[in-house]
Amino acid sequence: MSRYWSELARGLSPYVPGEQPRIPGLVKLNTNESPFGPSPMAIEAVRLAAADTLRLYPDPQSTHLREVLAEYHGVAPEQVFVGNGSDEVLAHAFAGLLKQPKPVLFPDVTYSFYPVYCRLLGIDHETVPLDGEMRVCIADYLDRGGSIIIANPNAPTGIALSRAEVEHLVSERADAPVVIDEAYVDFGADSAIPLIRDHPNLLVVQTLSKSRALAGLRVGYAIGDQVLIEGLTRVKDSFNSYPLGRPAQAGAIAAIQDEAYFQQKRSIIIGNRESLTAALIQLGFDVLPSSANFVFVRHPSHTGQALSAALRERAVLVRHFSGARVSDFIRITIGSKVELDRLTEALAEFLASPM
Ligand code: PMP
Image (cartoon, rainbow, N blue to C red; front, side):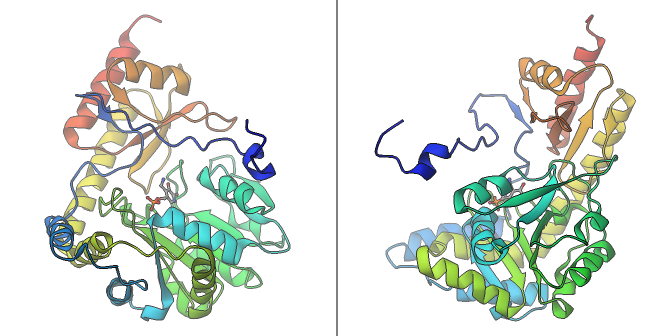
């Protein structure tokens, strides 16, 4: 530890993201990436942007991308904010909206980055336990002050709230900003975007990393009332003026416009999730009902750590989390059929081996 470090730097511990090893033949089901490439139109748009325009600075407002997103979601361009991945958008939402006099509320368990932002930005937070079935219970958020952020579907459980539940939350808590992080919404949950018209406290955050298979391009966005978007833009313009690069803006536009490719790939992933769920139940697993591109599962006879270690020995990588409510589970990303067959074969072999 350096004596030159600030108090903030001293108090921080590294955020541990999912591993990104480069081992040939490894089945990588640990970070919820798409098993498919992005739309060929997006790849071509990135290539063209790189070939023709890289010497030029990008449009700092991402005007065309925001227009395309606005049209796609049926809102005005002034209601769209874009960032380098939804992680950056969320950082601005924490700083510009969620930091309020009362602590921000989010579920325990949820996306592990939320407490990291709070620590970094000096925001007090309180966690609200999931119910006995690992669901977010809206009633628990109604009688307390404080802003709210909820991932829907939640991570790492994959369980989704209905649009009616989100509507109940944003109407009952009209006193505070409510951020709904919809990183995984395209895999079977209802987006809260249609609620924005009547709920000026609601900000919905989405990403192109999952259902559009563009995790490497880093594009995320938020949609909300124009006044909320102005709040985010204020924060961004005051300390982070980095716009999206030209390839990112061009690739994102093409990916949003290639609706046929998007629909085809997401329905394959949903189909694979249903087949995997059935196969895991056959193997004795308890599978939480997922609306995401992953499943959160546990086995009555083995800890999550033992399962993930056994899979790793068989060249299959899944995610295991520590913590009282989650350590029995493993989170498995929905890969291709071939990858999921490798996973279920590895699990069957492990479960059949003498303990
Ligand atoms: N929200 C949730 C719930 C996530 O799981 C992730 C990805 N790990 C993100 C946001 C951030 O995704 P990205 O920055 O790639 O858009």
